[in-house]
Image (cartoon, rainbow, N blue to C red):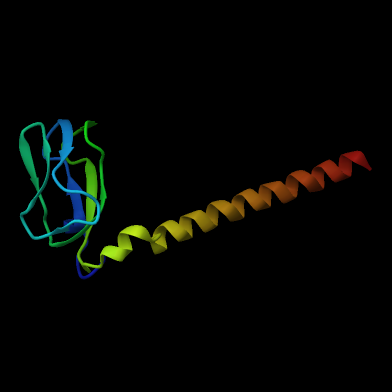
Length: 113
């Protein structure tokens, strides 16, 4: 939930086909603005805000597929910063790698002595 919105923030493909964006990341959109097309069918914003993510032109999509997202807080700067969720995931991955690395070197140490 961001800015009081949840599922409305997600830009979803309206059909099976090829996605063509009509806006760019960082664009300010209003409710029902066209943000892209699947084939010739418009994809409308379900909430106003700043486009924070968007598929590239020419990506094959299926009906309901996440094709982008809108940040209803309307702060363009958020497009260029890492989200709390992404930071948490990245931190978890780093911890796992360091833990495996520590185990690997401890095992190597036991074998060589």
